[in-house]
Amino acid sequence: MSPKQRVAGQTAWVLHTLPWRETSLIVEVFARDHGRIALLAKGARRPLSALRGVLMAFQPLVLDWSGGGEVKTLTRGEWRGGQPLLVGQALLCAYYLNELLLRLTAREDPHPALFDAYESAMAALGRGDNLSPLLRRFELAMLRELGYGAMLDTDDGGRPIRPGQPYLYIIERGPRACAGDAERRAETRGVPVGGQTLIDLAAGNFARATTQAEAKRLLRALINHHLGGQPLQSRQVFEELREL
Image 1 (cartoon, rainbow, N blue to C red):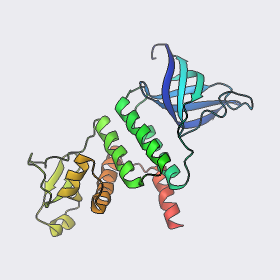
Image 2: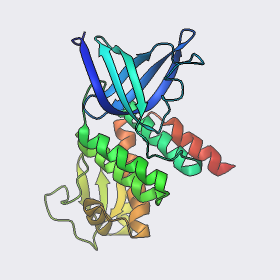
Image 3: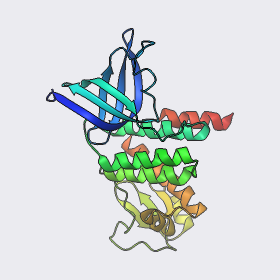
Image 4: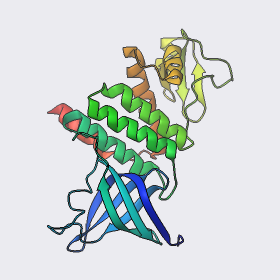
């Protein structure tokens, strides 16, 4: 059991909520200095509760909580403001980011840099920025902060990445130079990726359409590996909507 806490004025975002008994909620939040925390919001579903309109996903909050054990007790919640309501594809992307945090982070494991990356992504979604670059930036930051960082600067032999060289990215080994497209198609163990894409990823440059397409394929493979092959519900929703 964790020691009894009393935390005040913590910046946080709601990741997920579950009804608890008749009037309360269990709220999973992502807090800057405490990581992912489970909070009991007593009476939050009552019509006159001060928390009823506050505990919304995709809105920046300031929270107080106290208690020990796995689930703490929420004592105060206020909206920080400045974030527009998300709609359409931006809303679906936000669900995807939340699901990644719920599935890949451990409870009470602080990641301030990842929290900052999440806030930046939410702000970009609110502004209507291009979705592909902001998702790739967050995925890269998440893998790096959780200790799963992708090898982007050198190949599996320690040689610098060359922009015109085709590679196969072997999970847990890194990029391996190959003779050309024929070898990349014949090899099933790795993810085909160009040297320029790896260089662009290392620099955070997503201007090239090819970089965006190859980065999406590579980062999806890396995330799937760390998820143990378990599918993400948000991706399934994306696919169903694409089919419609």
